[in-house]
Image (tube, one colour):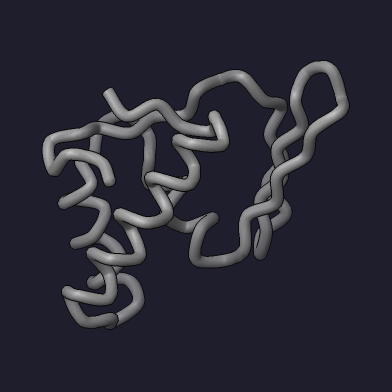
Length: 91
């Protein structure tokens, strides 16, 4: 899980395409594709390098009226998975 002070940002390693309800990533060699569903898409789009995981959690709580524990867990799990896939850096 990312540290609370982590400021996630796109890794820049993939070509990206926002389809509205989903978000696609293609590696530059064309042999890997990642697809984010709606909630993972929202979390990814909030990762612009200016928000911490805590700030992203607050943004989701405000936008979707979800409780704090659920939002925090979803953000932490999603950030970890996106970083593991190479879609985000957590610096």
